[in-house]
Image (cartoon, rainbow, N blue to C red; front, side, top):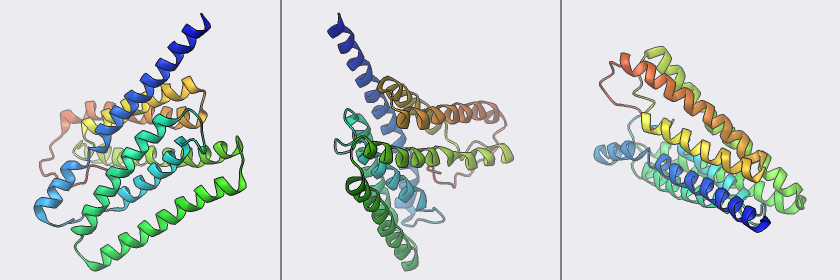
Length: 233
């Protein structure tokens, strides 16, 4: 009976984490229309590469949290963030290639170096100064802060939607993917009793649901015609 319960628990954890990986994949694909436009114009126009750099840092830190050196049984956290890091690196490379000026390229390189140094500092400090379980708590706190900041970033876009009564800058499928991914990983974190996973993703659920509610309300009033903003805010 205990073995059956344990097996059901393990299956539930895997199902929640795997679903989170699938929904995150849709989220990682959301900037593709932006980069199609960049490739077509052969220019980054007014698009900003900073969000992709910050997303890369977030993926690196959360990937580190999911690896066995820091946490046991968090492999699905590592896989989703490893995939996310690969996508962000691809977007950053395209942004660098089609940047409009040398100054922009130098800025991108400088920020990327700063980002890598910040991650290296976190990884080195966690291995040098902390043993288990303190190491997991340290990296978990850093990853939670990073995730909360990422989930909070759409607040500015939500403000634009309310101010302009236009949902162009808050695509429906991006908001839906955020909600579904956050819900899956919130359940995953609850099953693992991991505060560093379920708390930030619980906030992601609230923000995702709020975005969908705004979309449902303001899509009726939408009068915008010209698409000009990147889809990753």
